[in-house]
Figure 1: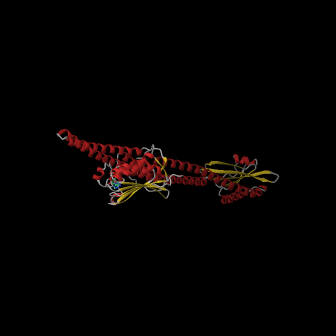
Figure 2: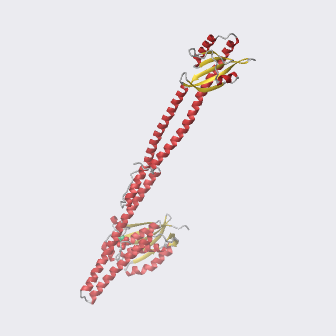
Length: 470
Ligand code: ADP
């Protein structure tokens, strides 16, 4: 069904209106020019014939008037000129007529053009001829004798049928041209509009389906124009939306799963405490377990809050001197390492290295990396914090002599809730979010984070930030 407000209809209507207006203007101009041209041509022709004939007539009017000879002269001229030729003397009497039968010979011609010509003017007019049943063009030309003035008149008339027939042909041609132009332009604009609106309709359908929850939409439309680019952007947007929505669903499910385990344990412990008589020692163990699970839940909630804080962008970047920043962190954490019987080294050079970062977030990154080194390095091992500059980047490295990360897991450990060894992570109070937080913070700082590790030998976690301009 044609929708009157659709682009397709409006575009076609506008094109048709424009072409119709243009064709009407061109046709009117062309037609009036051609009409003028043909009528002027005819007039010229009659005038030339008249002047030529007047040369002959002057001689004849001087002597005795011979109407038979004059009529056959008129007939000759008429044959060549294709017009009726009538000779008239100075009294207005017809003295020669190319029409022999039923002509005007010997009649007085009281016709306006003739009267004007007798007064010395070339005169012409259009009138309807009963005799031939058509409009005719007629012209009266005065014949002059030197010093004597007007001594007669040549009256010429010719049918306008041919001229009108030609003009009618031209009219038909212009009409057919207009119809053809409108058909071509109409067809063209419909095709053009379809070319534009087809993809737009596809986009509308895809957007509607997305609003109904079907997010995996893709538009098969390739072209470099504006609509093609719109379709490309739509595809990118749909893909991202789909990806984020799936991620969000997965994240919600993961969180629920993470929360359920400590809650189930806590529920079992509480029931046991409530329903069974226990020795005070055993009771204390149960309460300690409850406390541990609660700590884990609190840590999980804290990490989740940390992640959601990262989504908000209201943070202030500051110039941070990494040397002092890391030295402070070494001081704050040294005790924890010695408590776990781990050597803790720092290699922080004197050369000042500055970055632009959000201090709280940078602290979180270093802390998470140190926490992991602490958790996954067996006692007796060592952990080093190293700072250096390379290719305009300030790189911080946390190296340990711990378990290492198997090659197959190295690509995934920065994802939320990914753990190489569930049990070991839990033991150390891990939530599976530490490296995800590191990765998101560093990404927000336009930096890079990566791991190099060999299973059983240890791991090195790096993060690189652009050096601040001095
Ligand atoms: P978690 O809370 O489990 O430590 P993370 O996101 O910090 O979560 O780390 C993800 C996983 O990467 C950990 O479960 C662990 O298996 C592995 N991992 C992280 N740091 C180290 C490390 N220094 N040595 C060995 N494995 C590590």
